[in-house]
Length: 258
Image 1 (tube, rainbow, N blue to C red):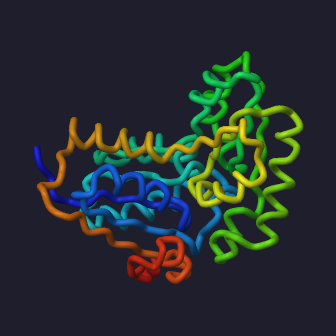
Image 2: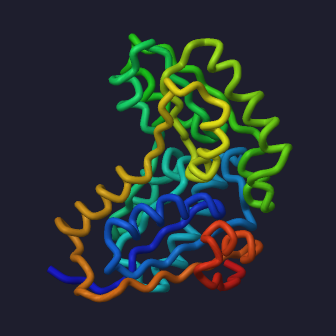
Image 3: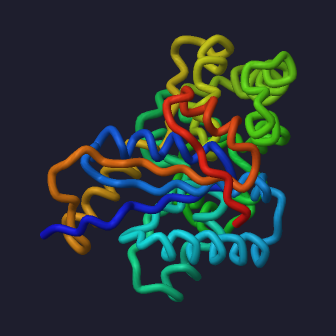
């Protein structure tokens, strides 16, 4: 089964490129279209209704570009809006949520930390996931300001280092051995987090799992691109240069006032 239409992805900004990268590595033949809704970042402090409205807007844009499947490359958007998106559209949606399960099942100390947005922590989907693991102590920390610094090009700034220490140091004192990253922006913080965390603490993000699930749904329901080098196209309604820098200046980003 073949389908040469592109895979569509959207996020509240540049962070979902961590998901795009995992998908591109697993399926290099697939064309991809990525929308960074940086103008409206971050989603984590918005109401559920506002998040749903933005997700519908993003979906309509990707459908206008003939996306065959849409990856909601944003934890907050997934946990607040994917149910509504699936009820409104016939196209398959792939979501992303914090990888609590592998951390809880593999933890030796039975204490894990989760760094995520307020919107993810307050969602019904997240709280249902947490309820399952009664034997694990889960320390939740809202990453206030992290997305804003990344979106403004201050990924490796002193302000970022100070914020990360303030969020992670208390978790270290509580003896976590897993840190779950609950926002698609946060994998870009892994190099800095590794300098802060003890060597026994494992960092988990959802990128590879989302890529595998996308491949599975394409194989089962939609179809894969015929052989050929996949063409990625990136759109941003914020500052294209920030997205270009995150991508290593390998790709040109198109400004689009979506």
